[in-house]
Length: 340
Ligand code: SAM
Ligand code: SF4
Ligand code: SF4
View (cartoon, rainbow, N blue to C red):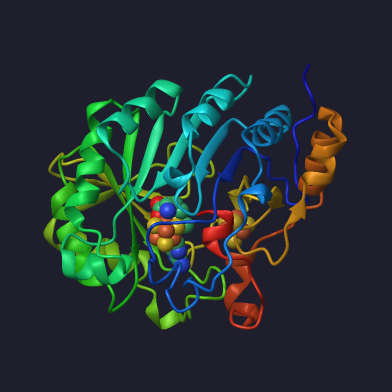
């Protein structure tokens, strides 16, 4: 049956759903899950509070009926959730879902795991890597995982022919900005698209400050000076990364400027937390619990709730962050909880 696509108050359709399958992670990236907050006293969600795969499937099903075509699995670290392949094959069978991807730190991506994820129906992979040298990378992940471990994960993924493998680098001034060029050099010509992400004020734990942001303009200028670039048209409306290609044919890069050039006008993403709350913006202060609707057990209840939430949506945080000056006082949800 066809349902009316969900459209929000700013005329934006609902197209993407990011599903956080766990709030846990084997890394402690200093900008995301700093050890002074996420330590042994931190209370991660008890297993019983996580949505089951069957519940996630029902939310995705309802979302697909309202227009969602793309699903991204994220976390925390999605690969720490057991049997993820089962969930992927369940999502793959949902009519209307044409794209399933995952964002991962790739440290647990063995050859067998890459193969089983691919076989289950995972199409695209985004791997996070923030530096090319161990000293910097270990300072970022704070758990002594080497660059080689992640590169092995990327190679394992490449062996099983995902439709695309993108590499995401969050750039934070004085933490890893000296790695911009080494990263560009390394991935130039590999066929993997490297994407630079401006450091964002997600959550409340990362002590964000505008002065720590290296802007997309600065990143492009730095790379262009050594490896000349030209801008490329977006692939589709709402693409978050601005595309650039190397003049020498070495492929393309993307730059995600959520801080310096926000793109809320085209934002068609909703996020589902591991506990079943829907967030209509990455910077939301509150989520909307879908579990009561899930418990009612019928598809109409979940779809009706999603439709109502999306219809009421007017979020455009990134376009207003500097005007509102509430960056530090507004309580926001942590990125490791709702996913990137
Ligand atoms: N653990 C997985 C990973 O790191 O790829 C998936 C979850 S992680 C929260 C998703 C993405 O968000 C990662 O690429 C990470 O670098 C990015 N991220 C986390 N905190 C961020 C911040 N404050 N600003 C920009 N990106 C951030
Ligand atoms: Fe874990 Fe990803 Fe956050 Fe790093 S960015 S702490 S890998 S969830
Ligand atoms: Fe979308 Fe919110 Fe990010 Fe704007 S700030 S692009 S509305 S998630």
